[in-house]
Image (cartoon, rainbow, N blue to C red; front, side):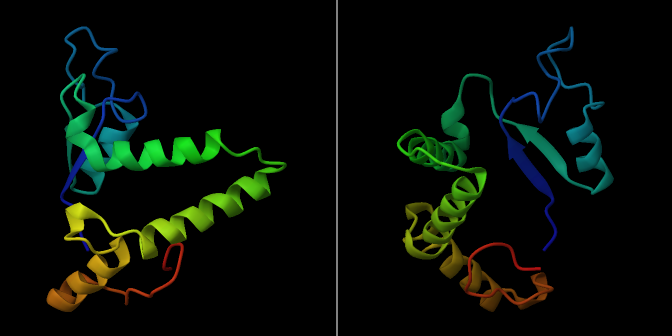
Length: 130
């Protein structure tokens, strides 16, 4: 699957918009350069409008709540908890934006509709398919 457009917030990890005099992205930021190198159009949400990036903000809020309510005794325990949550989120929590399917169900349905877009089979397991 080829990503052609990418929408991000205005975080310093994605843009130099607010460090430039013109308050416009310069195109020299490492993230922008990687996007150009891969033929991806990088778009930024309007400043002060996180709702534009609502799905990501909601997911980040869920992760933040999980981390705040749990005391981890090691980084391995934190990683195991995050992987467990990722599995639950991707395989067991239907999303309204995905017509009440889980992300994995939606991806599998998309693969059936457009098999030529997928180089690898979508497996029904947690984590990244390599």
